[in-house]
Length: 183
Figure 1 (cartoon, rainbow, N blue to C red):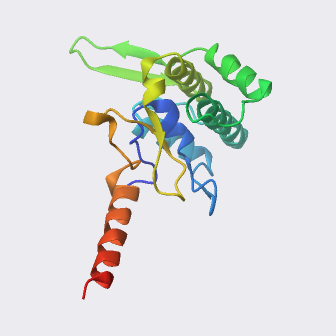
Figure 2: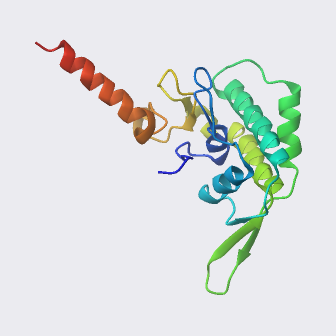
């Protein structure tokens, strides 16, 4: 299993999920320029990315946190986002998108830079907030997890960011608690 998971249903929410456990044991997943390349490739955003710089990692973290705060405010009724967060997302969204190439055999290929990736996730953030998916965004039911996801489940009943992450842990803990309580 890789370092990153893509269970949120939107690129912007998966990007916001590149820091784990915001409220407790913050775990940073964007530590090196290679991490940005890996995230973009595995997310299917870019097949080939021009090498980002160490400064791009710091910028990515700022954009990620702005996305998290703006989406949280819009869907979870969190504190109103700062004008700086809104301006940052709008600025990034105005940048160029990745370049898509179609070959004669019908395959596609995407190339670009760090700026193209942040433009795509910023645009996805704006699209999410303006779409019907906004009402379907939830935060994982694990009290330590801060991952946001779009609940497309039947009956709007999804509770966990992902079964492999928080869902299985919760089910195992419930099982252990029931076993301990039974005579």
